[in-house]
Length: 192
Image 1 (cartoon, rainbow, N blue to C red):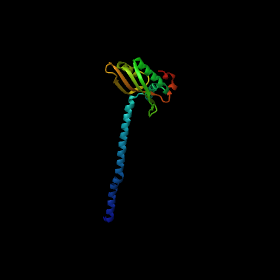
Image 2: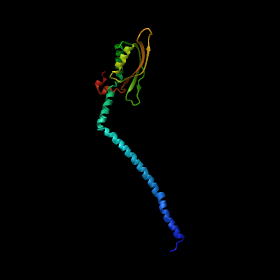
Image 3: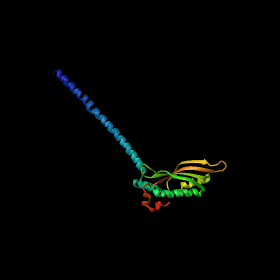
Image 4: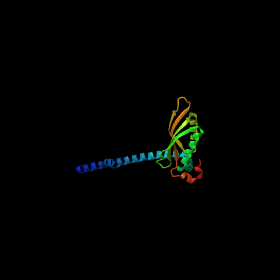
């Protein structure tokens, strides 16, 4: 058999076929397989995390019910907008109970939260009296059923010759339901 140019080209083409198949078929396919395998491992890790997290929650329905009850509890502590005056009267009576003299009370514009869940009514108060009474007033204020907050407080001693007398400038924030849903749902919620 004679081995000429034609046969040489044929042998070279036969040898080039597996090399070309490696570069154009097998190598890209191996890269795709590696990417898919990595993605599968990531998803399996996430599933394992989900299994571990759900293992702690025995019944998802019970967990949702508990969270709903917690939300309802906070909603009960939100008075309707018209009840803010009632809470302000309660605060005024607490101050009088502890022999404090409210000198001025000014309300600012209500601030509505972004989520529209609750609105905040800031009330600026100036109170005079004994520091021990003011401390007792703060403790009783903390025990109120409604959600209140005191974001600002400035205490000053009134006179150098009187012991324990002070003036407090406070901002009291009362949170309320801007839609008044608290009263419509249950009449009991409106009571303080």
